[in-house]
Image 1 (cartoon, rainbow, N blue to C red):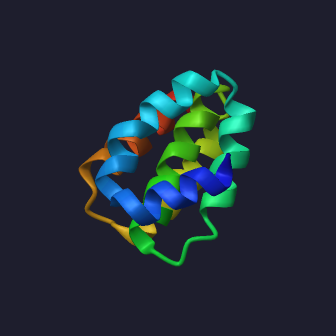
Image 2: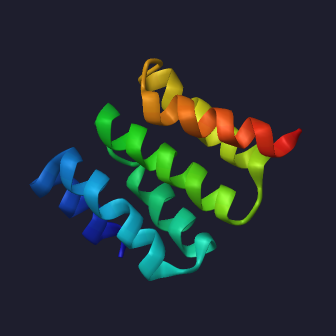
Length: 99
């Protein structure tokens, strides 16, 4: 499955991953499996792909209510794109959950 995601990244680019990411998480329904797939996707050397993988991993951890791990992953996304409104929004939400 991870190989398929890597091929999709190569062939369809970042916009495909952004649009299909939520569906992938919903179809998997298993955040642990989603995390395994996304870790494999991090083998990409493309910063856009890695940004999205970290972002979706943060969402998978948040789905498990592991907000500390979610924050770790979203911070990795923010290191790549510090001005990402979506990543900032998620960061703020995860931080609120920890209070």
